[in-house]
Structures are given as C-alpha cells and as structure tokens.
Image 1 (cartoon, helix red, strand yellow):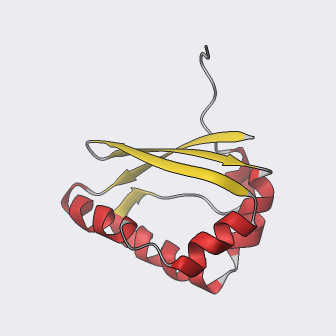
Image 2: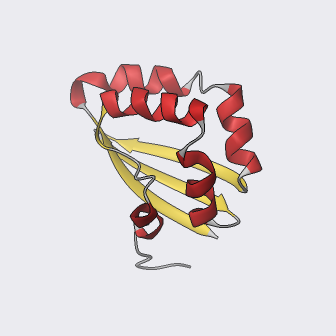
Length: 103
C-alpha cells in the first residue's frame, strides 16, 4: 500500500531537521523495514514536509514502531523540530492524505 503524509518543520529548525535525516539510526531504519516498509521518501517545500511511504500495512507499521525505544527517541527528537508531527496513535493510521488524481 502507498501512504502520503504531511508534517511541518519549524522554520527555524529546517537545517537541524535535514541534518537529522542524514543520520537516521541504523536500528530505526532496520525496524522500519522489518515492519514492512519498502520505501519512505520525504519532500520539503518551505516548511511543509510530504512523506510517501510504500509498505505492506500502514496500521501494522505504526503498531510495531509506536513503543519501540529507538523510535520513541527519534519521535521525541522530531517533536522538538516539527510543528506538525507524524501521528503514531491508532487514529494516525487514518491520517494519510487522500488521493486526488493518479495517472
């Protein structure tokens, strides 16, 4: 399945956000892949961040990562940099952006 998400980086934290993503912990990327993700890309336009995730099951991904210590540490770090964060709650599974058009 393919999920698109929107988050927003704080204007004064863009450089820190991009630097953090150059050093995503290997333990976290391994856990993301083990949870069924085959691809996760993030694009930035100003402060707006758009994520495109290809995964087996997005709800499963959230459930497997939600209580994982390396993810909790990462999400705490991201919460300090973001105005709009990635929602790991059960409601977050329905937070994907709706498809408007495809070719």
